[in-house]
Image (cartoon, rainbow, N blue to C red):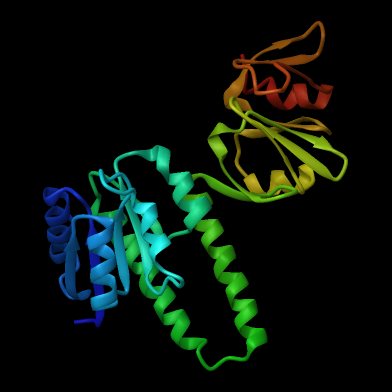
Length: 264
């Protein structure tokens, strides 16, 4: 039996008990206690009382959204796994609040085990670095941040990328194309256009997926949004119109050779 304590905050009694039973069945020796709360306010009281190591936090609740939990604390001393049936909230959970991860309802045991393994790895990592020097702490913090970014990219299709004023969180499969702009790059989606402080080459390396192709030196295209080639004008026609972007992109002869085997 490990010494970890958990708290489940969910306004639905069935969801509370369901997750509790899943944990007890799949990982019976992981937690010494699993408490439950039906609201953010009740959760705050229990956190102050039991000092949990990890909180499973529902996002959409009638009195207060789960995100409001963070307003009650000056310092967050516990890890958070968001639980939600609404994928719309995932980016907000990651971008604004950060988290160990999230579980989509209905909860899969395999995903639960993955996140709890990640939680335990982080706990072990923290213990190993308690006596390290400040310089090593900074280096290992950077490595943990980089590992977390890779986890979100590989498992959830999300990238973190800096703009001039903030760090953006973008779903890779929503990117239509990227356009070079000197030492910057603009990322186009259906709903937004983002100027980021990375070169096109750096963005290409960050995305690193086989469905993205350079059609010329200035454009990186998600081929899933390609409709057809206009051979007469040497342009690639997209199947949707990007926000503030172009619906047809110039293609070099090399770009045509690469893509002609992909698009009919």
